View 1 (cartoon, rainbow, N blue to C red):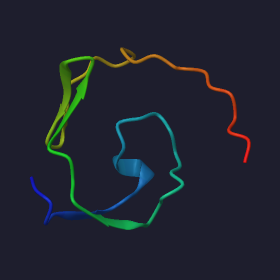
View 2: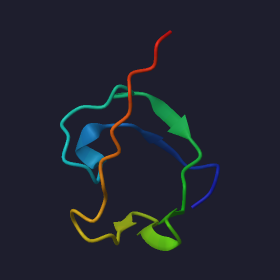
View 3: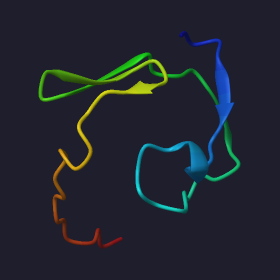
View 4: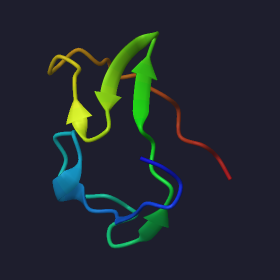
Length: 65
């Protein structure tokens, strides 16, 4: 993969259990080829490698603008 690749963002292509994306329909250029979490490869190209449910929710306070 490389920076010349492009994709239209859509929730149906995500590796998350959500049915929306605030960037739905936006076309982007440049795609990541690998994603690491704490040193572990979890996405390689289009392949999701992490064990389902292995992530953790980090509660954050809303940003006050």
